[in-house]
Image (cartoon, rainbow, N blue to C red; front, side, top):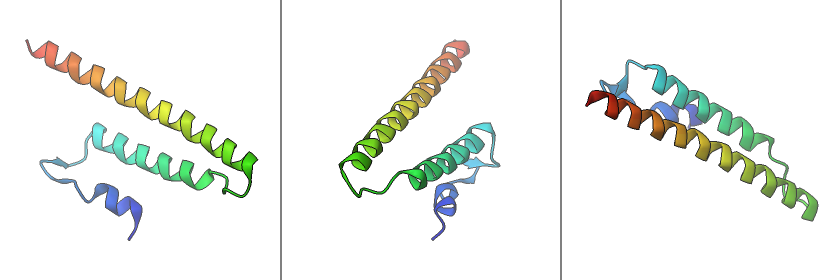
Amino acid sequence: EDPELLTIASLKYKVGLPAGLTEVQMIERARQKREFEASLPPITDEVSLELRRKMMGEQELREWNVREQEIYQQQDEKLAQF
């Protein structure tokens, strides 16, 4: 199946649909992740393995930073409700 279709398959009316900014950002991040994974070098030797590890580590750090920002935003929204 198409990976992008699988990404949005969990969205349902009033649970992600109609798509808002959050859902659009999720879809865009999934696209970027697939593009990144496609750009990884094949594991053919020790040098390409190290490069792949380095790239994956940097990508993981970026993903954690995005998630951290999402958590801060959710916390701010909850604090604003009080």
